[in-house]
Image (cartoon, rainbow over all chains, first blue to last red; front, side):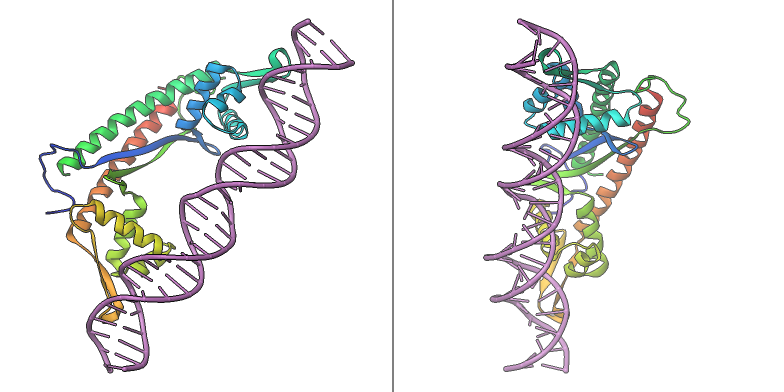
Length: 125
Length: 125
DNA sequence: GAGCGTAATATACTCCAGGGAATAACCCTT
DNA sequence: AAGGGTTATTCCCTGGAGTATATTACGCTC
């Protein structure tokens, strides 16, 4: 009869706890799901243009995100070269690789946290 | 030298882990910070209009949020009456009070989680 | 040095979520 | 029965975030 059950068998999970986390640096968001996905695609393609395309993101947006990350990290996560062989490109630095790993681990912990909280909600606090 | 330090003294916290959580029900978001704040204001003022005003939110938006919460909860969290003394009003039900308490507890846990993760990030995973 | 594909940057445009405004319904008070 | 303040609902419209478009710069290849 009650909207938020005090105690229930939890045969079915009525509610789930969802959420987002991100890492903030000096100028706001530093790492988030979108940014890390972009880093992964840059690593895969070696090009900001193609990475953006694969994520259905405008080049402009992708470039802004890369700039923001590079500014806030102690060392660049992505190094882009203009002109030259193939017209240029972008490579993920070692720091970039560590940034991906860090965020993925963080996100995995967050997932566990949410699952735990979801159980709490459905079983009644 | 590295953007994401592997190990650092953490004399200053360079990064903080931020985030949002919410409770999802059948039709998407059920409880979030904004919604719970609205519930608290409705309890305080006994009026959707004044609650919305105090949050600088349009009545339309507030009403939609209340509708959404009432639909998704087993029992209404807010009961509104039209016409009558004072033109009407809205009261928070007992289930509504429990919803506030539930989310506040959830959010407190989340805060602890973020603080822990922030320490992890700044000290190096 | 012409051509290529990319990075970098500025400008113009589109689209739609959100809010404002307007209206109706409601029912107690006087 | 008129008034008042609230809930409930529809319609219209704007702001601005994001995208598309356009332009320039770059440097290796051939």
